[in-house]
Amino acid sequence: MRVAVLGTGGVGGYFGGRLAEAGHDVWFVARGAHLDAMRAGGLRVDSVAGDFALPQVQATADTSEIGPVDLVMVCVKAWQVVEVAGSIRPLIGADTAVLPLQNGVESSDQLIERLGPDHVLGGVARIISFLSGPGHVTHAAHAPHIFAGELDRSRSERALRVVGAMQVRGVSCELAGDIRAEQWIKFVFGAAWGAVAALSGAPCGPLRELPATRQLLLDAMREVTAVAAARGIALPGDPVAHSMAVLDSLPPEATVSLQRDLAAGVPSEIDAWSGAVVRLGSAAGVPTPIHRVASESMLPRELRARGQLEF
Image 1: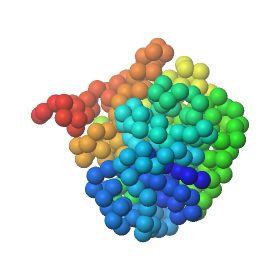
Image 2: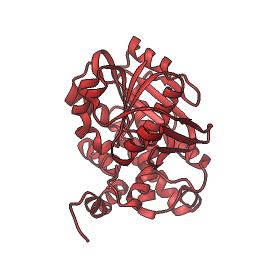
Image 3: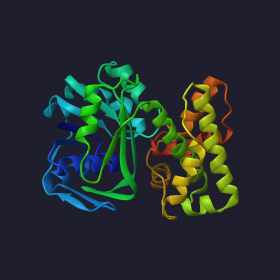
Image 4: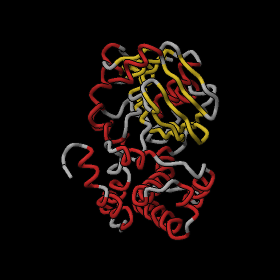
């Protein structure tokens, strides 16, 4: 399969790297020092599922150099989806599948608004990974797994092709019967962890062990499930209990990407996480006080990271 990975950070670097390792024709889209390092020395991935290195990779900053592909993996940060949507157009052929793998629940719809409905799938990536340095990705925890599926719940040939191509070493991929529900299941976990971690600055160990912050996590998760229910998203089982079980399974030093970005003073996904919970909750008439506090209290730091506020 011919694949373009748009955004070669922790998610794109890991999953795209595994596809390239398996022999797929993969192009990595990146910029700056990361692009320079990949062009000069390839891509290195340190992984709890097994380290690997690609001494040579195809890497560019310009999608028009690549041409149409079978699969576009959109792995930029959630706040970058709108700004990069136009660069996806040169990659689209008659049967191209566009698979967004952002945190949050809005990326597929944002892409449909800008590219039309014919090529966009829904996706979910479950992994804790990050860019350690130019040309270097670290997969720190969580068994790497992708859900992919049509947004209308149909069982299409293109979705099956994507899932089949991703059955490679170090990756499991599953065709989702209801990809929007899968996105919200992850959102319950990620948005709540992100909100409480951003407010406290603590890794997951203390958050889950201290009764006060554990209760805050549970309450933040319940806000998300209430918004999902109000929007007609049927979440199977008990997503709050499932999310806490996942959090309890992580190393105590684990951190979430949102708090790492905030700590580094770079733009974060707070608006796509707690901000989205507040927006979607408000539209559905559901109060979301924890996520409102998280979103609004992080706003000064977020604006400073984007060069819009000085202090």
